[in-house]
Image (cartoon, rainbow, N blue to C red):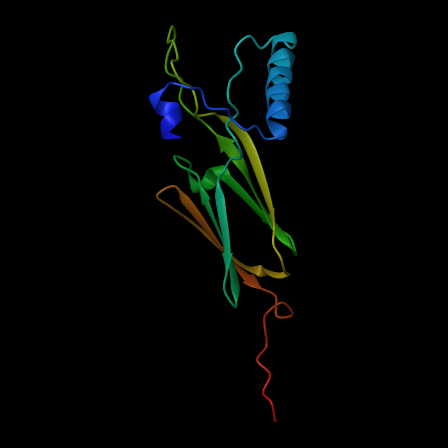
Length: 152
């Protein structure tokens, strides 16, 4: 290694077999974008809203990031094994003649469905929105809750 650095001998890079496939995939994506009329490909905003789902012995907790949204702009529906959050994110226009240098915040309708690993009590669901974080507490169904068995 030191010999190569001292005498400026190039090091050979070992390639993974998938490197060439990755390069080909990138080129195909660029070609598809050019053929579909997308001269400049814009990055996708991703899944909105970003959520965390946790559980304890009696409840599931869904926490979703919804900055700038109000509680009356959200629609939350619950089924026996999941939850759906939908609404419309509105972002005020910047004005006429504005040139964007970066545009990552997207507006529009969204819908996010989350399947939960067990059955839930659809009548025992609470939701609150505080500082842009939607917190939904979902009680597990009695059949899904763990039971402590005493050994005799």
